[in-house]
Length: 171
Ligand SMILES: [Zn+2]
Image (tube, rainbow, N blue to C red; front, side, top):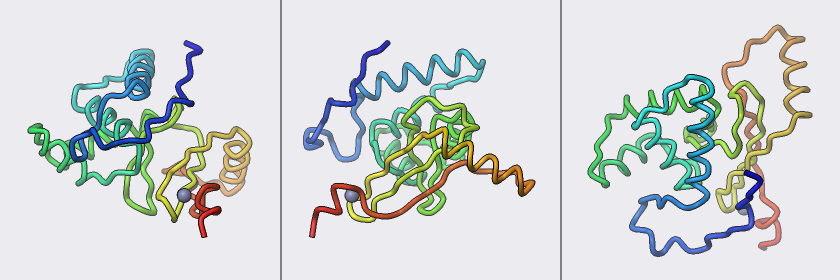
């Protein structure tokens, strides 16, 4: 289980048919983790929820709900938008996906979180890269501030926009 795939880079998407996510090792690993998590919680990862999560992992970038509708339609697996929204709601509730309110898009969670933690998402204006940062320091501080304000948060995502380290080098 200590196996890490963070160094595996897949620079080419050319062999992938337009928009269809390929089940890479990374995706398979993430799906296995998600399945185990749901099983442990007694939450049902139905085939539809599974398919949506797999697509989010496979695409590995922020995706709009209607883009998923089109994607599944192109694969001959038509799904109504409401079905996809419901699946996304479930995934967000379980901490398996996040909604980026600033762009109205969705991403797969990079780590197995409880869905109750605060995570920071760094969005690059240059390349569109999205990097999720799970930091207990950030989570604790935000939680304390919310408590002081008597505030009940609906979302627990801090969206920060700017330039990633790579794009800062490009002039
Ligand atoms: Zn960038």
